[in-house]
Amino acid sequence: MGAVKTKRMPRAVREQQMLDAAVQIFGQRGYMAASMDEIAELAGVSKPLVYLYLNSKEDLFTACIRREAGALVEAVRAGVRRDLPADRQLWEGLGAFFAHTGENPDAWSVLHLQARTHGEPFAAEVTAMREEIVAFVTQLILAGAREAHRDPDLPEREVAGLAEALVGAAESLAAWANATPGVTARQAAATLMNFAWAGLGDLMAGRPWAPPEEPPGPHVG
Image 1 (spheres, rainbow, N blue to C red):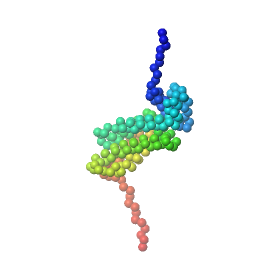
Image 2: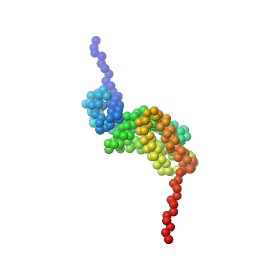
Image 3: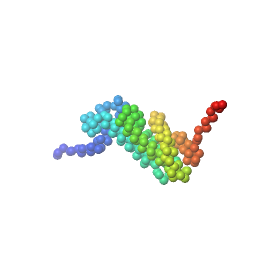
């Protein structure tokens, strides 16, 4: 009998296996401390093969950022049903965000911590992802605001800052939730909804908070 031939693993599958290992190592050890030897060992391949597929440590890290950024954006988009009221859409989007970051803590570390602290081109990749999520959240809030105000032409700028603030709060809360044992995605989403929706709800109802008027200046005789 001849020797049994083993099927070669497709390149795309092998590459994803390397990226899985790289995300784990980068997320847990940091970009500078991570070594290609560790990544190759965890992936079950030789270091030359990692270099053959992904060229360099910088290219490997960039590939990790792009893959994980795309997965996070897709998770948020897929989590929202557009036939629901505005608050339910936001609730489901936040739930999807916190579920994904909680289930993939190494990936979130790569995106939220590692990529942002090592300059270009890594920071630019994360900025592009963030802008996409902010744009998506802006449209969610804008649709609700236009419906509440019965004004289909309500300018986007009226809610753009709210979306920026909400996404920033979600990013910080995700880091806190991942570092705090026992915090579920549902609890994190509820925390942010309780923090944000009271204000957003009033805005939708035409009751925005306004700063107090400036006291009159000293009388000049």
